[in-house]
Image (cartoon, rainbow, N blue to C red; front, top):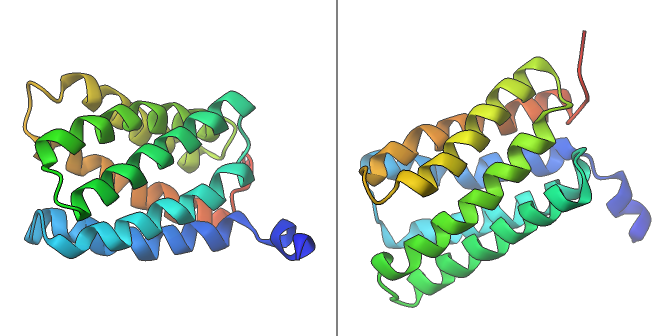
Length: 164
C-alpha cells in the first residue's frame, strides 16, 4: 500500500484538483454562492493536500500549504452548516496567505510556466487577503483561473522541475 502511494505522481493529484475545482470556479461567474459548491471545493482541497508533498518546496512551505488546506476545508464545512459567509470567509482568507506562500515557494524551482502561474496565483491569494476589506470579493476570481492554469501545467509536466 505504501508503495502505491509513493508511485502516485503529481499529475494524478493535479488532474483531480482541476476536476473538482473547475465547477467551483464556474459557479463564481454564473451562480455565486450556490449551496453545492462547497462539496467539490472540499474535494479540491483534499486533492491538493495529496499534491503538497509531491512538489519541491521546503518543509516550512509545505506546512503552510497544509495549513491553508485545513483552514479552507474547515471554512467550507462551516458554511455547509449554515455559518454565515461574513463569519467564515475571513478565516478562509487567512488561509489564503498560507496558500500563497506554498504555491509561490513550490513554483520557484519549476519550469517557466509553473513559475509564472504559480507566482501569479500565490501572490494574488496572498495579497488579496490583505486588501479584501477594501475591494469586492469578485477580484479574487483571477486567482481561480490562474490556479486552474497552474495545476494544468503541473499535470502536463508532471510537476517536473525547470525545463530548458
